[in-house]
Length: 94
Ligand code: SF4
Ligand code: SF4
Image (cartoon, rainbow, N blue to C red; front, side):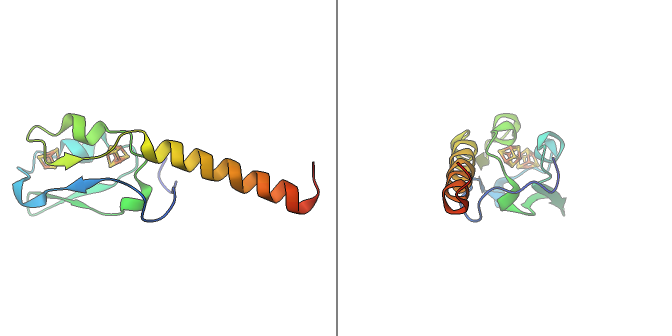
């Protein structure tokens, strides 16, 4: 799934980095490589590849990650559907 992107600047992902204990679970569970560890602290590498699956927040032992799981997936699918619909209409396809 690396290389996959949703809409820019819409992901609800937040990280309270100062309170991260550096366990690395978020790095392990994220299917899109959103996190990296720097000096024993998690860091968000690219927020726009987050699909808001919620795995990082569920697995963080100290609860320093928050994300509205499912919102980005739905938004991405709807936006994609509308784009395709508009393209079909403007191209006279169907
Ligand atoms: S919500 Fe899912 S895709 Fe987004 S950062 Fe967390 S684990 Fe990665
Ligand atoms: S899972 Fe939580 S505590 Fe562990 S590295 Fe990620 S943000 Fe830090």
